[in-house]
Image (cartoon, rainbow, N blue to C red):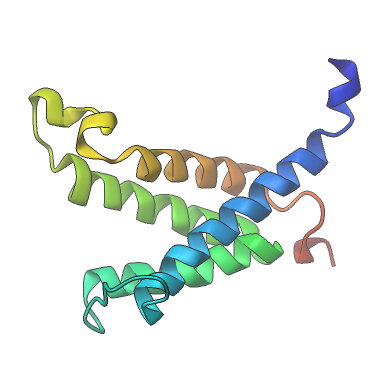
Length: 127
């Protein structure tokens, strides 16, 4: 396991880059309809979410203002889970596997981890 430990910062950088790219793609889909027929109205909560996804995702991807962008993305995903997936329902709807909120929960905690750790390596924050 010590052999893998020397690659920890690089593995983390890959996690940051991939998570940022994936989140920004979701925002790109919402705002520009790329590979999607869904177009939220401009100014709506879903549209604002798309703007946050696109900008925070790109900032995390390149590692610029990484902590702030990741914290914003984490909070947005927490709101997405509570408001759109769980909706404070009891019973089976409480569980992410049932309410289809698994990605929102995972994104929330991945971006929270990134917010706590920062850019580390392969990022613009270091320059």
